[in-house]
Image (cartoon, rainbow, N blue to C red; front, side, top):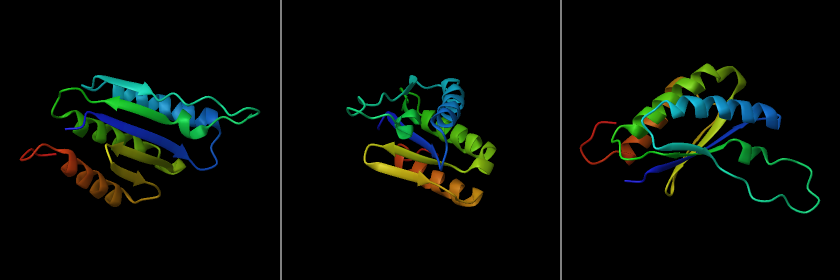
Length: 130
């Protein structure tokens, strides 16, 4: 079972500070779970002469799930709740475990619920309920 989940949070036309704030709130909530770690993903060095901040790197988190069988389910539950509370600003999420990617952007609550259900099923141990 993979034990790391990469999360990339973006928001169309958002300033870097806004993305950093949203990512920080999500990180705080995830740290309350039974996970080994939730770390910001460091960006690479800026190209010579670059002035812009890479907003995508600001919104990147790496969740190390640890050995808990329910950690991924807990993480997904928190992300769904967080996304529901920020539905008015339309943040987009990119989740990746291994080669499996889930993209959420401008989806209904029902579509989000179904997408997360399928994602959990793909990453649950055989016979376990997501």
